[in-house]
Length: 389
Ligand code: NIG
Ligand code: FE
Image 1 (cartoon, rainbow, N blue to C red):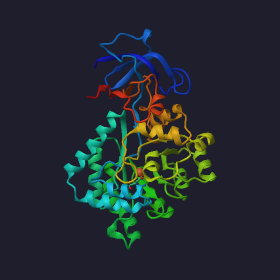
Image 2: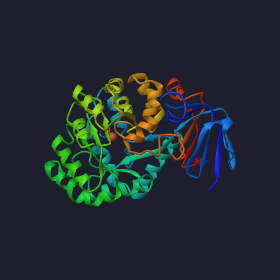
Image 3: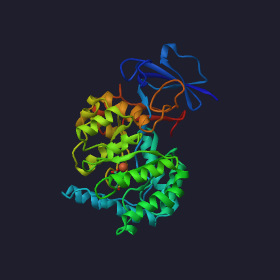
Image 4: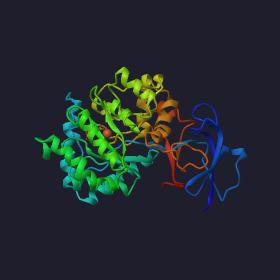
């Protein structure tokens, strides 16, 4: 294994307060030594040890690679018409998912994998080094299992979302669909996934159905996470916290009791501002969650219906502008927060022993991600110790 010294970093975010200044553990005039796919050393450039080779960061700033803990990337087609209709005043509804289900079922494995690769390369160019992705556009035993098989070739963070909506094949028998999801579909899907998720919402699955699906997944060895309180108030957040889910995602409509549960439980509130942007909905209130003491993550929710962005920098800019987060809080949420939402300690930080994932920015610090929105500031991305081309 060979070592690489990445040096001449003007400002480094480590996310470890013990390594540098402030809550983000920032180091000025920093260097990082990568040893194979791990970080071996972090500190000031003047103290750096020898390495097999040196890489000049040319005065850029550096952050941990983004951890996008929520995406839906196994799909075919897009929903441009639906987006246009929304921008003309129509509102978002979960029913649009059926359009993508039809296109995804009709696509070959090769098409689905090529699409997934396209979006994950796009995300990587914008600094994402870890991503979670879900099934949920197949809704048959075979189509859900193949989505997970394809996803598992590209990430360890694979989520079974057979309970995205009731399959159109079961329009008159939602209970029958829940039986399928918790039975044959779960049996076929569990070997390919780490997580089980459910869209707990009016028009998708109610609290009792969601509990049955998550509990069945847990019995099969999967860990729970929940699409909760996106379009309306509902039981999703309380269910997530009660089941010790790693994350409750969306969290747009929260009662004081929901905020309190998130603040005192072990469940991360994952906010997905791309969805509110793209559906012209009200923003989730990150400030309220942070002030209450909840852990907040930011993710893209990249999907063709409600949030067709793969850009974590865009989500950071929205969170800072419209959700009451400071640039430091948003950067933490998009890196360490995402890692927490995936119950990972090896990513989302630049510390000795962590995975060698770094994004170098053409900017003096990460603050410019929100200060200069829409500008492609991510210049270099290191993933598992390799500089992506
Ligand atoms: O997270 N909320 C449910 N699922 C997606 C939307 C999927 C779609 O519209 O295709 C979401 O926003
Ligand atoms: Fe989602």
